Image (tube, rainbow, N blue to C red):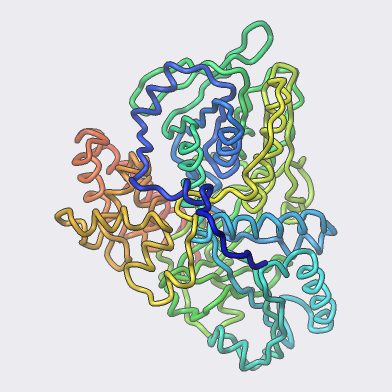
Length: 563
């Protein structure tokens, strides 16, 4: 849809373009927590909790968002980084979820164009051992038509059928001897951690109190009704925070603590583990997301390019271990590598893995059956004492989940409010033109894809402060000035906050991230975020975590070395 030129300045758009860097000070936020009575407190700083905070703040509610670790440190930084309707949900017969997901996909594309970008998906059709039997290809094309008509058309381009040479032009390593043709359709991808952070920052811009590294330990009640929470900060300070309503948006962690009274009907939480490994892009050479068959499994895998690495994923299995220590194992690594080697002409092996992520999806389902067959619907529960719980769903539908959650909160509070997030640009996005900004590459494109129209704030640091123009992590495009900005303006308070989520160094180059960790610790001290003993402790913890990640990658489920 083309809009007519405006004769007046769009004040709503102009309001979202900052003249000065946003404060987003954790110290100031903690001070507010200690002295404010809130309409609601949201526990959990993932994508759903962050969007709920933005929604509530826009409705004029006094809201606090509390995260025990860092924004998106759980599931919301461990996703496939895709914003999509979900072809397999059509296969499951869940067309309503697909239609709504595709609508929400386009809302994210419009509201955060610097973070959410169009992504082609390529399905090769092979003569044997393909993603699906060639005899089913006609049926698959009908599925793609259904997908387009359900909302895929909003991207402005429909699926297409490709000749073998066209398929190879998008991924030259495909084994051509079995390649008959291919299908390409369109969805979107996102840096999930930066999206979550940007939503939390936008919530703060509209008045929300937002704080990471604040762990809620108990839900307080008075007269049979929720009255607030007890919490503790990473620095060891105890907080007793008052609120009329509490929202639990902790995802898989509801399995271990849900905050509800003993007689409340808590939904079943079934964490499903998913893993991705990062390998050099030169081993794959794809310019889009390619879908590959995995021998012996009904589930297909995907390979997506991010810079100079390719991400291979994902698995989908029940998980019953510690939610704070989820790692990719040797079995899962080999599963993805073997699938890749079956479909592509590549000598990829375990030594090529430069990083990995593992996380859990918070499925709302009882035990039994395969997790891949569980529908990705969400559930919102309101207890008689005013505790609201939201769980399930997926990244693409997070805005809608948040809308329904704050609708439920409004009912608890006995007030009428109206959601305004469907058309709300996030910070950095108002007036941003992704195509023109990134077309010629360079530092401008690198910063713009991460900060949008706020990138000049980062560029000011890089230009004017000593050492800020130096590379931060060997082999990656991130500069020291970006780490400085993340500490000053993005509430990064640990080495992991900077290297794992404000930038994605640990996933894209794990060993180089470990080498950069001491420098990040020094920056945190220099910026006054932490003291030297804390920096030393964080460095030890960070290197220990990387050692655990590497150890898990070389550990098989039977705890025996592969022969």
